[in-house]
Length: 114
Image (tube, rainbow, N blue to C red; front, side):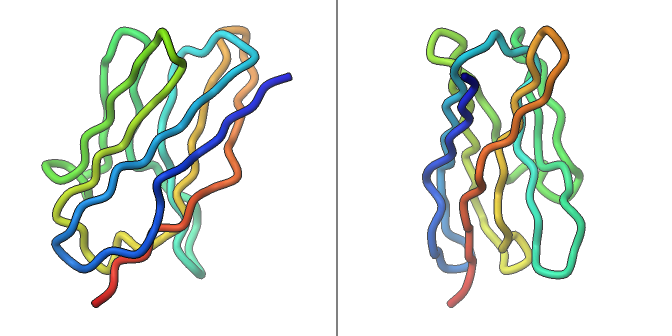
């Protein structure tokens, strides 16, 4: 059974940092990534990383967020620095099986507010 579990969200002041973690189990995963959905908006890409550590970032987070991955642990991280109120959203982990199916976590809330 595939499980994708996020952790690390919370409340942080503008300019602060948070680190999200996502553990995926039960399959072999290729691309893993983070997406986010703010209230009243569509889910959007934040960052992705392949099993060979090739990364892709949304323009809005380039230079502030860093995605990384531990293949032995099937874990992907998102280090978020210089957070802004507009980063407030539910952050979802996405894990794409090498056999095709895509799996999502339940989401973790990130709130940036003073």
